[in-house]
Length: 253
Image 1 (tube, rainbow, N blue to C red):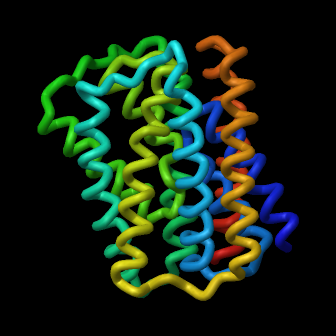
Image 2 (image 1 turned 45 degrees about the vertical axis):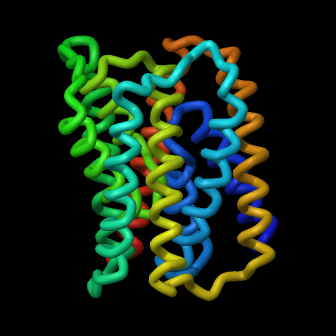
Image 3 (image 1 turned 90 degrees about the horizontal axis):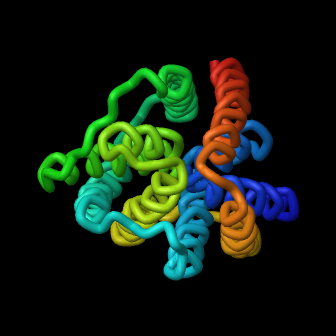
């Protein structure tokens, strides 16, 4: 299982680095489907992998021609930090069938994102600059990503595209920056509340290594892609995720 987890981490992080979704949106449902591990363990392992990928991607992208929009992204990151904390608290307090709820929410999010992509050409986007609104948006993104254990996901891409009129490559870069902060806060909260699950440390370490390797591969591929190719890649990925989420919902029932 360790080798399979390593491969999942590399593939998910490569895809996450290219598209800006973070990789957890792939790791979470795939591990749900094949690992037999509890949602708590999967969330933690996914979070660690996504954080390692996000840190590596941020460092590698410092010299990228696609720059971060710090005037808005820093406020988004602040909100994501707060949201990451409350998302983890919400997850710890949840007593129902968390796997089913997570799968249903992920399915709904991915369907809505697909609808947005289909209608994207006819949707007038915004140029949000107000720091309060930016922080609130980041808060919502942080709560959802932390509770779902996905690090970011397609919702980040849509929010950055719609509220801030960013191009495909800009959304990918800025999304990874927000993911970095939300995931860091989520994991710090896990350690601070002594709620770290019992995990196979060897598997966890090689998944984190896979996250770094995936970020390197993803950055190399992304540098050769334009906005149109990035959008097509994202759309194909969404179809796969929707089908996977449907499967997980059926199994969880």
